[in-house]
Length: 300
Image (cartoon, rainbow, N blue to C red):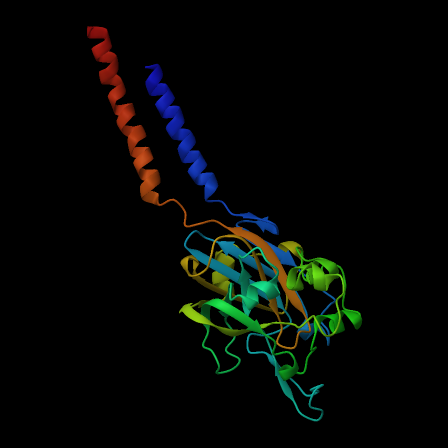
């Protein structure tokens, strides 16, 4: 009887541990399964259309959900004042989203092709929308009338608190992540490129765009932080398409006029329902044997 109790208790603990292991741990702000990074509301160089307010990621077990909110619509906008080509208009919109699981700074991970990238805004014909692996990043900021480097952006006074959201809140945090400590200690206009687009990589899967109703049904709530922008953009993709473990995810606008980053932890593929089911079946079986065990003991 004592052995049976020990088995039942051990099995119950195992089920609990399996359940806990499937919960997402994150460095951002976790609310209803969404991991949020809230950006400064005043660091969109050029006005509110260039201001990113927040980013959120949800791990549903088999899918990854991503949401971005701010003043920029999915299709982007046209700016009539191209800094690099005066007198001509230029398109400015969302650039690509990156996931970095390497544990290295962004530039190092990019140079070694260790990034995952997601193209969700169909802003040019070079790549189709979808998820890419083995990614090296490139800069497209000057093609879109923007800053050629991040130091320039900060020198013009855009280094507010939460400069790239909850997890990269200071300019020093930003420099450390994107370029490593050597550059961070001596950031200049020559060593701080804004690498904001997929330069090369292999497409491994597609994404599904999500409307407001679908995002609300999934529990998204930027309003919890008073951070709902004029536009909220969302999409999902299969979790198996990217890595697992600790990550930093980040995105800039095409012009580099604002950016945001989020730290999190994506667990490996959860224990299947079958595994937990086997444990529960074991519990049920042992419980069913209890009356017979008592009967045999009495007869003895």
